[in-house]
Image 1: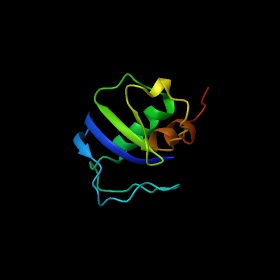
Image 2 (image 1 turned 45 degrees about the horizontal axis):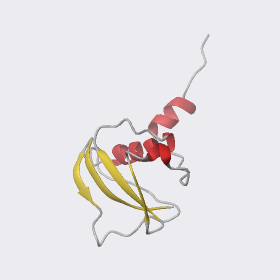
Image 3 (image 1 turned 180 degrees about the vertical axis):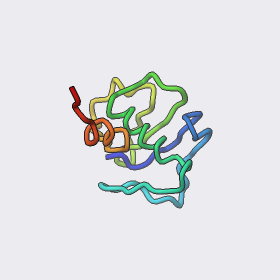
Length: 102
């Protein structure tokens, strides 16, 4: 399980993010909300990159798993220990509101 996002560097809206000590760790289910432009879509993009094992990104991020194991944006394709499913606006647009007009 992803415990926290240790850091995000030069990735979309985040230039230099480090997980604050007073921010609680992720749990099994998490709700991410905030103002427009606050980084919600960027966070879902990070999780989508993990899901797709996409190492071809601009910037970098590092995730902590179960309070110990670290993975980062450059070694995602070598990781087989993390299963992530992202259900964001892009997923909904592609799968829910997709019309098959022929």
